[in-house]
Image (cartoon, rainbow, N blue to C red; front, side, top):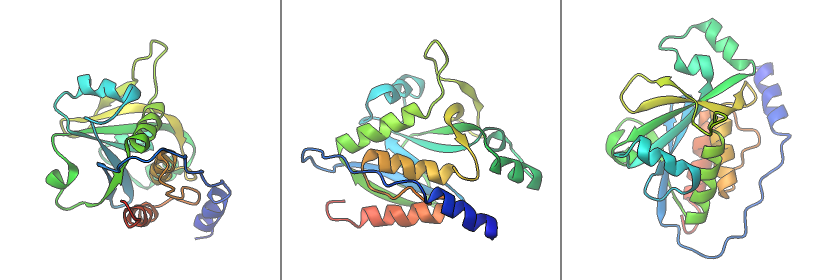
Length: 209
């Protein structure tokens, strides 16, 4: 318990992200924040993404949405884990992104997963897409560092640029992405999935969302 409190205090030292001053535009794009118990992911519509993330259109040509989740590289790719793996994952180590190609929007595919739809503007999605792209590790030839397939078709592990640790978890990463998008999620202090989902519900409840 003392360790958890210390981690929260340390992460809480980071400053808030200032919302960009965008020109008025409709929040007519829907992204999703998904809660997989202790782990959260964000799903974005491929038809509206911009920048480097459009490269995935040729990798997953049939995908309507892509989900992105961050994790510790060795732990996240293991089919079975134990207590030793969990403790090791708290220490700083290389990160990975699990990219999941979805043939439809998440509500049409996941019937037992808690999720929050967020209505965003094109500018907000553009910034989120840049954050996701920058989180993906590239080779010197500007190729994605593909680490291997996940358990199911359409699940692929890629190298991540952020370092995973007990102070920077999958949930910290999601909240940082929402903050970078300009949604004022409140990333400082986030370690757990329930914090992400509470923040997502708060964003969804704002006028115009």
